[in-house]
Length: 419
Image (cartoon, rainbow, N blue to C red; front, top):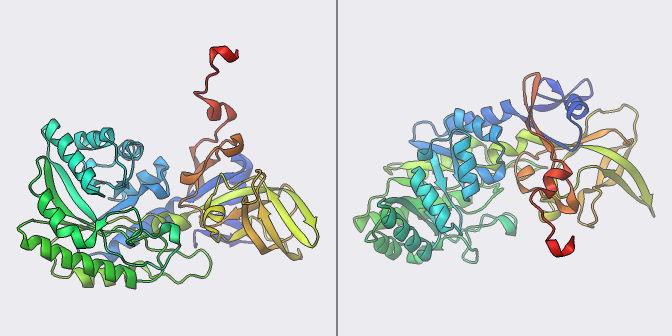
């Protein structure tokens, strides 16, 4: 995370001390580096130089409008999974022809909205969804651009909750039935087959699962083409992992080299849907220490952020590095649990983690929080969600204001019989 680094024992985001943001905006607060987002996108795109490709940022990783706009201005598209995400993608200025609509449960209204907008393609997850898209498109007098998501039954060797390419997962259609389903789709009214889609999971740290999945997709494409069905897009999803602790994921260049080798000579546009890889290490969650607590040889540092702000440790037992905003010389390092204030045992960010002794009022940065951080947050315990800030050089910009309790209860009504 070169854009979050220490200078004279103070943690900086680009050229700005993170402590200045905490002081100005308060905590908890998400802080994103514009340069990290932009340069990671540019590097990923450059790695696929020489191939016809489109990078559609997986919006579920981080849906902040400023983050989306960063990728759109860099030439990217967006991968969405709901009507809400579609609306936010277009609000960020994304050309609908660069929007891919994924997800296993698209509603009829969402399908209609996407058809009217004129998106690049639907990644279709089931035969019933395909039939519904056919009906809606026919009623509108339109052709729906469709790629069918095929489940390749590839084990990505990642956390079970983010493995999506196994036979047992809810995603996609069975690989063995794909050719026949494509043949039926080709005869459906309102359907224009444009490609094939394959996505095997998230936080994948080996190149081999990607190679296996792309290899299977290529073989399948060739079988489908023999049926006289043209396929112009190959969507291989995302899933490339990042370093949270001591992982050694492939670099963008290593990943791209392996993929390009497998698709050599294949006449198609390559669609990629990275999310975590582009945003994960471009953001941190800053939190303030409230109290220290010791009980039976167990030490706790209680902070003002909670698992509702960053769910990954509680949800996946995920590791995030935790760093003080100021390194204090001579401070003893102790093993502590870093925990939040909400009423759940699972409300933690780290367990038995070596950390310099912290005093109430001092701040910590939870690293690698740019993906699946704010986008998965909630208002549990009626906690307003944090502010979001983007840094560009020495300047910082609030790109989402901190919620208030009024925001949390907006829309609630008490029925007359309770008044």
